[in-house]
Amino acid sequence: MSYCLSYSDISLVDDDSTTELSSVNSSSVENANANSTNATTVEAAKKHQRIALEEEIPQITKTKPDIYGQKHPIETPALLRYALKKMKIEIDKIPEKKKKHWLIAKAKSPPSIVGDDHLLMFLRSEVFHADRAAARLCKYWKFRIELFGDEKAFMDLTDYDVIADENEGDQGISVGVIRLLEGQDWLGRSILFGKLTRLDRKKYNVQQMVRATWYQIHVALSSVSTQQKGIMAICHCEVLRLDQFDRELAVALLKSAIGILPIRISAIHGLKLPAIVKLFVPVVKRFMGPMGKRVKIHSSDKILEGFAEYGISTNVLPAEIGGAAVCDQKEFIRKRKALSRKAKTERQIAQGCSLICAGEF
Image 1 (cartoon, rainbow, N blue to C red):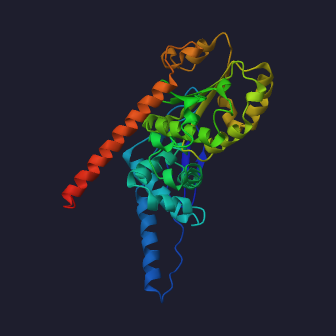
Image 2: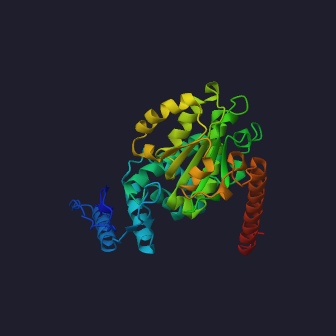
Image 3: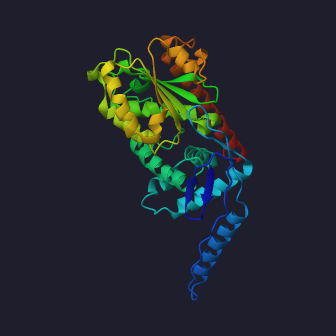
């Protein structure tokens, strides 16, 4: 698979060989207004930036297709440097109206939230298509601010406080419909386990559930291997009633997953689907396009054998489907709260030390 890059766009060309980034064709720079020294300086700086970017184009090699057909870029320092510079140029090209939420985030968030590590998540989710990563970043921040509000949107989304509300509590995560498993698959993918029979609109509202899902996905994304290799979902549908299906929630989660959250969805494994649901699976897979090939439906009497075919050990699968892992959502919440308290204490100590060093204490 080869990347063909130009300054204005990135296109993907399929082949099965080692890939290489082609040279960047720089666009001509319009003559600056001779009467404006400032305009000339700006145009000269842009031209210098483009030339400098051309001079450091790295090579990129991708792995052979894995069991889900995904090829993964082999990251090098040169690739990461180049991709970050390219993405920042692409962000600059986006009209201010479309990136206003990203600009707000940059102004209000600490550097640790909006720095290069943050941008890398989007580059990895778009397999280093810088223009697509920039567009996804802007959509993400619009959705993030709408979902969490000004008070929490600019916090670290792995901090449990972002989903613990004094008035509403944390029902979105405590109900346990969607759970992040502790283990990963053999390639380092994180695993989300959905127990759809726990759907009960009396116990949560859609916004709570979406926030809880975003929180768990960001916890998963703290693993670089998950950023690089993707996330896998397991949907357990045993005795699911049609009246339990939450269409509003499904739409909201799909909206997040497709083109907004910085994730690569590697596979969706379906377990114990009701007969009527199985009838719609082929239609849904066709609707999903290429992604439909990654929807895997398992036989009810051969669940563990089915996962073994995809290199997923019983040690990471929850006991409720025959695995060896204890999937205790209350314990997960307890651990995450403890980590958040520890991080908060460390920040307070660091701030105190800064004040002392600055002579303000």
